[in-house]
Image (cartoon, rainbow, N blue to C red):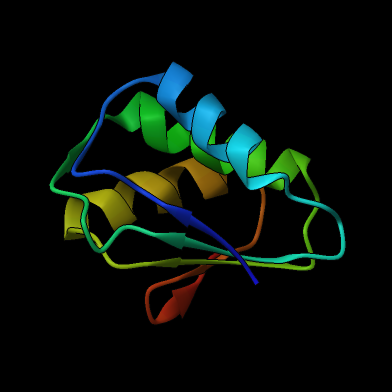
Length: 93
């Protein structure tokens, strides 16, 4: 499993790009985006990380930890991009 650990503050698209680039995601990977340390994020960060992870076409993606606002931002991005991820205890369509 490939894990992307989010920092306490995630506010830029550049940070999303750096985190995904460091993860070296391949199409054979199962990816976990770990937001347990996340305290604050921007909607643009959430959108960009969802976009980049989906472009890498991993086998599966799970977003864990984080605030309800984080999960709303991730779900909104996944819905807009029409990608399916496991977010917390739910899945996106």
